[in-house]
Length: 406
Ligand SMILES: Nc1ncnc2c1ncn2[C@@H]1O[C@H](COP(=O)(O)OP(=O)(O)O)[C@@H](O)[C@H]1O
Ligand SMILES: [Mg+2]
Image (tube, rainbow, N blue to C red):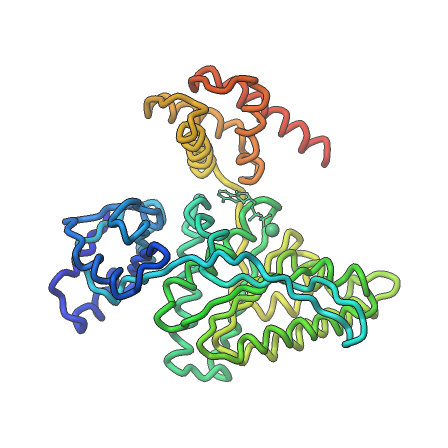
């Protein structure tokens, strides 16, 4: 457990306190409550100590504050972090959620042609991404690693790093099997950064590129469409107070290895070249991060892999992560009244037995099992022991389905 007691420390002292520097308090403010009033409520908090698991939420603090998350980069995700109030306000990031939903941006080859949905734009932090981060469970510290990388790059840019000496591309590539959480990590990272960095960037947005539609409709024009899409990104990024994330999900559809393009390779090559040229242009802006994911790392163009500062394989969940994912699913069923509350011992034994039979399944597959089991049970409420056989049945069916597709 790490203890963050920064009460009474001067700001200068804080600079030398690694743990304090890496610790963030994300405080969600009730809509309509002014920042000033929320800050006052924060000072009034007479809680001696708030203790939470690193990067999970603590609810119900003050009527003006909906909830709070404490996170520390220098300790592993599942360890406990405690924070004493009143704390240094520089660590506290107040925020309210944007609930406008995504804005579909269309791109077209020229002004006269019909557009295609090239991307959707999320203003962050937004309601849809709110609980992504804490619900992602891994066996290693990948979430902190990636967040720490992102914050360090912002820090280098703020210090005025000369990027012809130290190469900083702000391009991250996540590789791995489908359903391991690549897209979710990107969204969670962007959401968290939009809050943690809200003292540096007053606005934050994510452009989610629709790689498939850029290719499907006007295949021969995809190079031009890519260029158009990046023009839109450039325009948004031209405002230095905006932190911009560009998510290129399933990048293999837009950036396949140029040497492997089939019979008529020119269009794909043109699209890949356009993408690389545009990425190089966008790299000049220190407020833009490009997040790419791919299920097929082998078929990605080498130039994209080369440009990424971090290329990280997102692993399938191991036994510890699987147990935690099952636990979170069952806890959810208890919370909504499908399963009756049960003892910790029963819960742990059920989750660990399930997890040892689930190795090689993705986290996405695991999260689908409880709903299928519930449907199979034909019961509206039951205890965990009654539910377990249905969980196993759903798990076996899932495994069968997956092997029959191989
Ligand atoms: N590591 C994980 N821990 C918990 N849930 C996960 C994890 N990875 C994926 N999921 C679940 O699976 C869903 C799909 O994940 P996604 O990010 O789309 O995977 P990918 O992009 O790798 O195919 C998520 O919404 C989440 O519910
Ligand atoms: Mg994905």
